[in-house]
Each structure stands twice: as C-alpha cells, then as structure tokens.
Length: 133
Length: 418
Image (cartoon, rainbow over all chains, first blue to last red; front, side):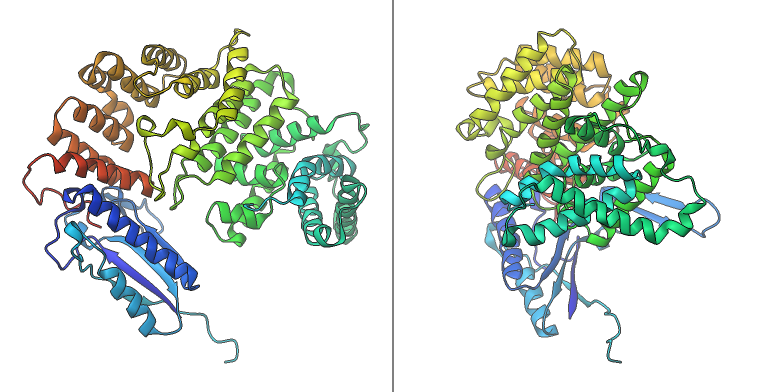
C-alpha cells in the first residue's frame, strides 16, 4: 500500500517560531532528524520518495481552457500557509504503519528541541486494478 | 554507475569506438546506438562470469553488428523504398582513429537542435557508455522516461540529416562551443545538482571529466578545451571539503583545505598555466585561472583577491554575464570592504531579477558590513528562492546564526517553517 504523507506551511500545532529564529544547533538537529527518518525508511524498504518543495514565493497557479492563453498567477499568495511544503511517499504493509511514520515525523524537533507537532496529511495512493480481477 | 568494476570501465572506454565502427558500417546513428546499448548490456551480463573475450572491442562490434543485421532484415521491406542511410557515408574508408569517432559522436550528441536536457543523457549513453538505467538513476527519473528522452533526442538528430563526420571547419568552433557547454552543465549537475538531496552526485562530475579528457585528447591544441578540463579538475579538487560529516554545505571560506585533492590541483594548475601562455584566452581559461588561485591559497585570507577581482573584471567584459558581476562583487568586497562590494550589486536587480544568488551575496556582504537585520532578511529571501535543499539549509542556518546574536521581533516571516 502506498501512502503520501504531506505537510504544508501552516500545519504546525505548537507555538514554534519560524525556523530562521531557531538556534543553528536546533536547525541542524531538525535536519538530522529528517535524514535519519529517511535512512530508517530506506533501510526498511519503505521509502519510495521524499522531497521538499521550493518556497511558496516560487509557486505559480495555472488555469487553462485549452483554447485561449492560460492564466498564470504569480505569488505571493495570501493563502500560502495552505501550500504544500514537502512530502514523503512510502510503500508499507498497512495504514497503521503509515500512521506510525506520520506520527514520528510530526514530532520532529524544533526550537530548543521541543516537538513541532507538524500536521501530516496521510493519503493513500490509488493503485492499479488487481490483475486477478 | 557507483561501483565501477574493471568490466564497466573497459566497456565505457570502448563504447564510442564500437559505436563509431557500427555507424560507419551500417549508417543510421539512432539504430546503431540502440545496438551498442544491447551489446554493452550483453557484455555486462556475461563477461564478469565467463571472462572477457580475447578481443573485447571486436566482440562488441560483432554483437552490435548482429543486432543491426537483424533489425535491418526486419525493416528491409519497408526500407527498400527509402533512401535511408544514403547520407551516412557507408563506403567511406575507415581511416579515422577512435579519438576522431569520439569527437564526431560528441558533436552529434551535443547538436545545437537539442536542449541540454536531451543532449546530456544522449552523450552519457552514446559516448559515455552508461546504461539507460544508470542515467535515469543519476537524474532521479524513471527508466522509461529517460529511455523516451534519449529516443526523442536521437529522432531529432536523425531529422537533422547530419553526416557521420566532423562538422565543416566554418561551423566547427560554434559546434565545439555546444559540446563544451554540455560537458560544463554535466559537470555542474554532478557538482551542485539542481535538484534532489545529494549535494554532489560525484559520478556525473567524474563522467564529465572523463569526457572532457577524451575531447582534449582529440583536440590537444584547443585552448578552451584545455581550460574547461582545468576548470573541472580544479573545482572537483575541492569536493571532499565541500560537505561536512552531516552532508551539509561548507562554503569555500570555511572549508578544511587539507581535504582538497592535491593531485587534481597540481594537474589542473599545470594545465591552465601552460594553456594561458598560448595567448588565446577564453571564458573557461579565465574561470580555471580563478579556480587555480583559490586552490593555491593556504586560507581564505591568504587568497589573492585583487587578482581574482581583476580576472572577474576580464570575464565580465568578455561575457557581459550578470552572474559574473555577482562574483566580482564578492572579490571587490574582499579587497575594498563590504560596502564597495554592495555598490557593485547596485543595478543588478534589473538584470538578474529576483535571483536567489543575488540575495545570498547581498546577505553575506550586509552581514560583514554589520547590518544584521537587512542581512537576515536577505538570507531568508535567498532560502525561500533556492531550489537546492542543501543550499536552503545553509542559508536558513546563516540567518539563524546572525539572529542568535541579535534581538528582533518574532513572527516576521512564515517562510522558513520546517
């Protein structure tokens, strides 16, 4: 079963300040934690992909009717907290395991090592039809 | 591509030679390249267990030729009415050397009709002898996607109806420029990597150096080819010190210079020093000269920044490239102080736009000038705009480092949330 674990810019449920206001050591610890999680998932054969996205300043919205010139909207966007910041794609045995991974990453260390309580959106990826069916 | 066994090394060495022979014999670069790929895969599957054949090159030519013959029989009915291969100079006597073939293949694969994104993988496959799977892994795309990209690139080349020979002298300089540009981008892809978590995908840089050596072997008197190779060697020499134990970016000024590769520095320095005496200075040579000054300095403070400043000035006049002006600003700041460097940046906003590197350089110079608040804001702006995750980490940490010694109102930015 494949799950997409998504995080956006606004989903921090602690009163954690923005990352640039952390101490350099806290930032290093946070990055090390994320790398460690990816290494663990790789070692267990569960990681498919993990990516952070470039900042919302670079986001563009595109709408087209297929005939006339597309409408392309540049940032900054007032709703930028809802934009996706990054994701992990994992291939696991059960939804329980996906939730376990999500919980672990939600508690990533923030300023002074306090867990940031990042909200993680867990979504199952639709799969191809079973060949037996 | 990571574990280069003796067989892999040999196969990659032979790949362009075999492809040259097969294209000469049967014409049709696109099909010949597929046949080579199959022969290489067959060799990689059997040689390690059965042992290498006595004449590996002849073995590969034979297997690839068999593939071509099968393909040809299959297509014969369809092809009979076509004048395919006529333009591929089938009967030209085989008087050329393997080096010439490598060069001709480089010219084809870096055809100006191709974008670098298409030229680079095609070069890696046809000249570098890498498999589609290896190239796909290096560029973090599915194998089928990469196979399709290569196949479309070959269709473009086929459509250009270019004969399998060296370009005419009047266009050769321009075409060589394309080749060097592709190799330079390939090197940078490995060194700086435009996307993904690995700061240096070392094997792509090594492959670029190997191919640059091959071009230099074919064109030993070309000063810019020599300059490009020297630039790669002198840049690659710093790779071991460019990341710390956690894989994070270490800027040049803070690198442990004992970890630089002395052998690469010696080779690159000797090459650029000799080339500069030829008196045909070009962009790559100037960049290599700058790299040689950095590599020869015992520390950041001991660096001959005045010389670097004047070389960037020269490069700026040669290219008119605003990114060069950005680098000159750093050198000016080292010689005349941060305010002088910042003055050089004035006016670049119009030419570079909202570029992350302009923000990053401005942040550094503002920080050195003691304008902490403005520096933090610029570091944050740079971090928000970079597409390299390691650079992003570095820039956020720089902002945090400045902020740690400074009191500022919180909540001014929501952009660097984890």
